[in-house]
Length: 348
Image (cartoon, rainbow, N blue to C red; front, side, top):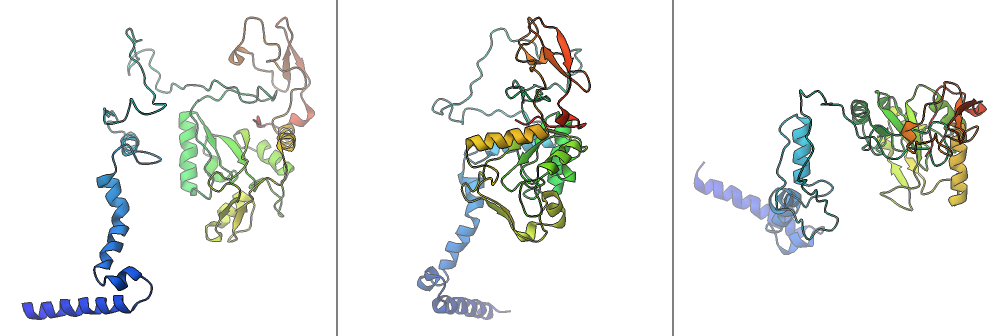
């Protein structure tokens, strides 16, 4: 092909594009700037990549900066994850920037091979869930860091299963999100069951709240340690949320208790309560059916002498609750008749 023929073909193509741009009525930029206007849309298309890899600094991206993502990638691949975060971060002018001061006489850090080295060391939570409201199954979470609510439906089954297996390895709690308890949540990790305004996994066929289904789910072989009441959609406050029909697979529909291939709607508010007082009444109803109140004085009302920490309190005998007298003597009392299930949850 000669140069003349090639240039003729290129010219014909450009002429055709220019005619199309001038005659079309959808984009004013293309009408005003034939051919050249396409570069504007091209730059707009590749803009996110340009900003991410060329323009944006390593510390500015949200929700995780490039520094943080690099640390996560290296850790997941078991590569060297020791990075110097350096002084390119704004330290002095940033509010609430965490600064760890050097210790003149630091304690020796245990290393692999040392007798006191524990690769599975965990930092328990300072808070004892259920203590303030006197729950029969109040407990201290084994880890201060836990997995927040991400529902099955928003996440795939594989993602939910991976998170639950990770929770089992880390010894932390896995929040189910509002999508109900699915088989992918039963991979060994202990759960916080989240109940949202749609009551997924705890609803009747008509969509109203089903307390008996909650009781049955908790009493089954599900590792539910606590129940969380989610008041509204964080991403869509005041208007609720929708899982489109195309995403409501039969598996998701079974976990949520909704019809498959139909839009799954989370209402903007809870139908079961109207204000703070009725909300607390609702919480107590759920607690009575699952976590239960103490049949007598809870141990934190009058703890044993010399003990101010709940972790120091002896465990209750199987099938009974324990009330502490002011002298520190324990006495067994009959359990609440509503707490006969083998597994229960300590409602927050």
